[in-house]
Image 1 (cartoon, rainbow, N blue to C red):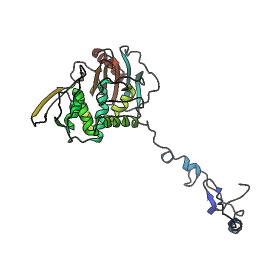
Image 2 (image 1 turned 30 degrees about the horizontal axis):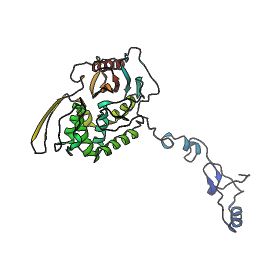
Image 3 (image 1 turned 30 degrees about the vertical axis):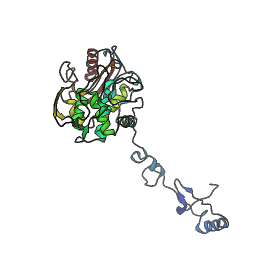
Image 4 (image 1 turned 45 degrees about the vertical axis):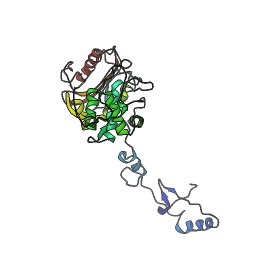
Length: 341
């Protein structure tokens, strides 16, 4: 400051003198005013210690005021493969196991590899429906529910059929009905295309940047992909909804919807998750709460689970592109063994 000392009224920040530029003749008047008010006369020390409320040190050292909340503060972060010596994942392409309480990654293999997710796509379909729809909303099927792909899982709904979003989400997540996915998308999004755009926007907002959807059901399509890690992010967001947790935990479901003529149509299903059907058993002291299955020729067998250990701590595990149904469950049991260590 060229030796200029400032009065307390002119002090700013860490003691810098504020010198406003005044146009024209005002500059001379300003110099005169500074001499009358004491600039160049008595100086005042600026407190610079941790205990002072106006200390620059005090301001920048307050973490609660100067530091923003990190985006991934409560998330597991996968940087590279983290393979367990006792985990046999040779029959699957990608996998991840996350401890939700400690935000630790217990296992990861090709967690960021873009793969076809099959019906694990329906996790995002359900998430968008839960966020933007209401459980009492009445859905009406159109011709969009007509799916002709061989082997596609269908509830058999037809144009004109009606059911609530609550009913539809049960059929979507438990039975993995692809025609119901189309009905949900069209009614919640206004059109299937708009709903898919909503899915992609929500995925991006969650940080799932290696994901791109082109349909709401997961049947094989070009440019439709995600990763094991991105599915962890989406599933982690979905389990924040009580309704989602309730549905994925159910072993069976019975309901009645109505066709276009108003006739009652009964529907019954069991959960496609074979851990809940006790066809496969989780390791001792690990409880499978629920999850989502997915299978297509292109995607192989896929599975995502929410599990808890003996103390109730939650974990998310994902396996993509296993060679077979048996392989995905056997590999998942191996993966869940890591929770007990």
